[in-house]
Length: 280
Image (cartoon, rainbow, N blue to C red; front, side, top):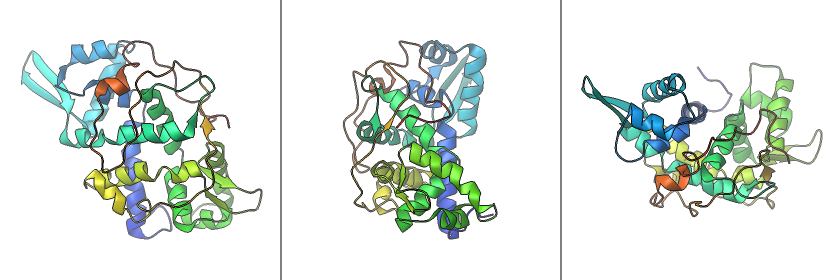
């Protein structure tokens, strides 16, 4: 059943991307996926890489990733069980450097750059705000839209004023702009810059190669936007020493697990940005 008033194929596209984000955004999921880069690991080997988690916390996380089809459990014998990426999980990993590339351009921190893994986690927090994906799709497609018109499209069965809390959140997060109360909303430069990420997630969730992102009907075409107004992470964190270079969806993922995961295994990770959102 459609959840928006958008055409069925667009509605399904948004739903698939929202589901993909829901698989990887929960706390520690990206770190577990990165820890499994390379050969499959026994539970004890994976636990050693996630040393800040107790066994009771790690097991349900692994199970959820197995249920999502991103990780597979291989039982070689009664005493030898390993965990590794499924083909589907491995195909998703090249999206992570795209998120880092976006964060490098649009994430501003008070005390210097974040480690890449934390850039990913904070960026995912923004993308999984309620109704964020649908609103971003509409703003990209229609350039400028009033709040009332957005409400009719994004939440047609709800009171139209319910659109304003998620809209205000997107403005606070730096992904949307408006000239003031009663004026139309539009994508910011940061919101428009999400095109490669959202296009790649759309391709992956539809079972297509990531380079199909360039042909996405909404996110596959660049659009000039005003100068960026970066959002600011509200956490002060250690500076990164290994940030992957910029990538395009067509580029091969010439990054290494250690580039994204090096900080995660050596120190207790910081919490992601708080629910109230980053400071502008």
